[in-house]
Length: 452
Length: 102
Image (cartoon, rainbow over all chains, first blue to last red; front, side, top):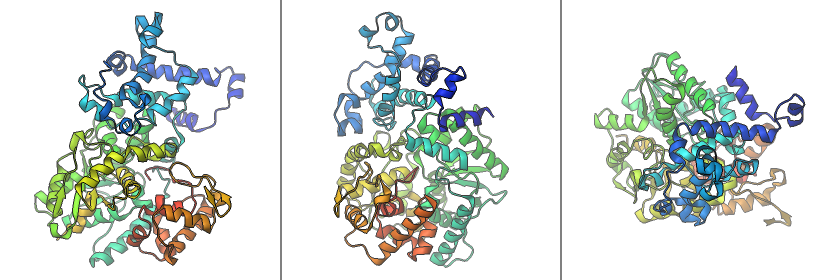
């Protein structure tokens, strides 16, 4: 009940006059107080470290793809951190309380709140690359997320992300796809797979009890880009895997992770885990989704306050095992063109999955080349952290992807493989805007294509 | 942007801010931006189906219906619209950007 109330409060229009007549604080004051609660709570945890942690040494400047594309002060990682740390300093340090202007401390006002989304959503993809280079190991993502939590508490999450969270809470998936449509799509793809492979026993199982694997997918695989789901079904069939998807909670994404709304993020996670238990599976396997992996694999247990009752893996890890153990046979000659690999920040730098995809590509593609830099030092594609959903920053997103475009061009690759649907869309757009002439494919598509 | 004597505005993702102003001339000019040299019969079938579905449901259609109603296979859709059904075909059809991971 409490949960429903908190959702309604955020998505409904707030009637300020009515609320004031009933003795509630005026909207502006209410928003500031809600944001201050988050800020003050953070000061007892991560925020305490961030109050004075940054030395402003500037080593991180050139690590940020957004600063490199738009070299303005506001895009410096240290300047972004200061948007939040200045507020902490004002309330939680002696000098900040008494001599704020001497220590760069400032009050949280509605103006500050109104400007906050521009920094925490519009100037940072929370890719964490600056943290890799920071001499103190400061993780800017942490402080940016405190800002996002404040925005969520104060009703200032940009619409493109907030609507997606609301869709996911209300319908169980971020694109509000009706259950019937999911079922029809699974049937349609099954029919196509039978035609394509000539194998009548191949299928996409839905809501089947007692299978080994519950496979979570990105709803865009149902609504717009089904080739990766078809490929996964083809590979699972070849491996003799026992698997199912759920028609209720199949969505691996979690926009509460992006928006800073931990209540929503926890609920989205809880439903999926409950569904896995209800279907009696042994393991949850996640489709190729960067933030979904980070959120579900690493943040989820923290949001729920307890470990999961069953193991969770990325499909990349599973495909790697299939190939290594000989459970599927692959022929690299079937992917003859040059392939390079883009590392999604949330899966690789922030998720710890970096080698399985490389072992796979070395086995399924005849000419696999790395882009530079890569792995934990890789550049963000520009579309991460929720940026892809925010049209208002479309120009900046494409401009900040130029580094990625240059990296890709230097490899001479015709295909960019990436284990993230969000990166895939950004890479598609980069290919078009920067005339790279590259195709973008999920790892599982290349594996399916290489099946011997 | 001036198209056929009308001023059409786009958001920073290149989607129309006022989808009601869409017409075939507008579609042609978005298609050029999309890198489509010539709008074939198949392009039009896809775009017109999306447009009709959106008018009725206020939503982009799922790719299953798109393929079924236009008679274009799923693999071919990505060849015709290299940015895919959402950022490619829906944009040419004058829809606002669909929500979520697209």
